[in-house]
Amino acid sequence: MSLNSAGPADTFHDPDVAALILERYAGMSALFAQQASPEEVYDYLYWPELVTTGEGLPCVFRGKENLMPTVAEFMAAMGTDCVWTSVDPIIVSGNLASSLMQVSCRYPDSPTVDYRAIYVWQKRGETWKVIHEMLCLGSV
Image (cartoon, rainbow, N blue to C red):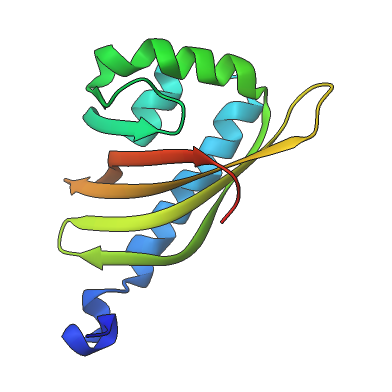
């Protein structure tokens, strides 16, 4: 069964939600360029109850308090020249959406490093933030 055969096209693609998610990606790039704190970055992108794991991480992290040390370490290594982009598709259903993300970071004195992730977004009120994340090295 293909995605398009499961129901109306807007069940899976909502250009308004896609635009909001793309806006979040642009905001992440700006936060890194401004050398925002790990706390500011976390609060901008993630809900406090985030569940995340990724390549090289020792476990599944549940909640902000458990992930913040890793966010701070990750940000310190990434530098300030990072660009977030979306890799189609952004799939939407109700108050949940999923997206594939690509971030490319130019590190001082080293080549560009690419990360990719799958994000599950949740809408609360009018705000979309990431509630689940899977991160790894490489490009999509």
